[in-house]
Image 1: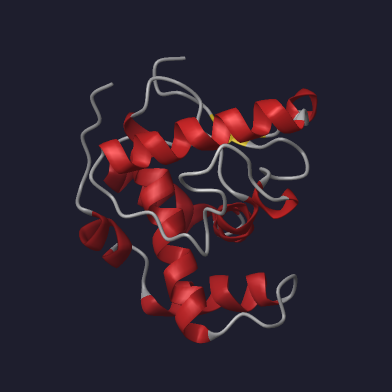
Image 2: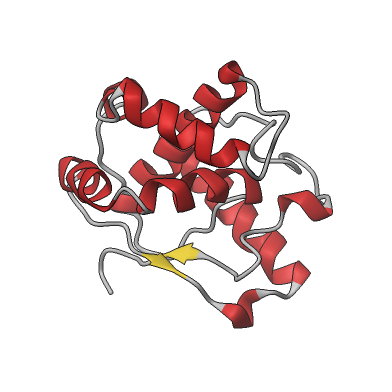
Length: 154
């Protein structure tokens, strides 16, 4: 799989500080103990997920924690569209209620982690539980609705 994209730092900088603060505040509604530092790391992990997804040729799925940030960002439609344009591809959010099988969710998460690592990004284990393990906790499953991105070539 060949993935081309901006560095995670450059992609992260595409999200203005006030939008990052809004995303952290929105996620804090579902995750009250979220610190500002952990929130910034969450935005960064969402960025590496989206940057990798923008060039992927197969669907990728976020962890539950990354998905919280993605959901919040999608609601900023203009900013999200501008971000995707800067990445070079619009990353659609695709709910898939049929993808709730735990084994399939773990496999999809592992594929996503591998793609992110192969793209040269660092995986933050606080946002991608189960890294380097054959199993993952219930918290690592993708979005409750089975969210994934849409491959660029589809």
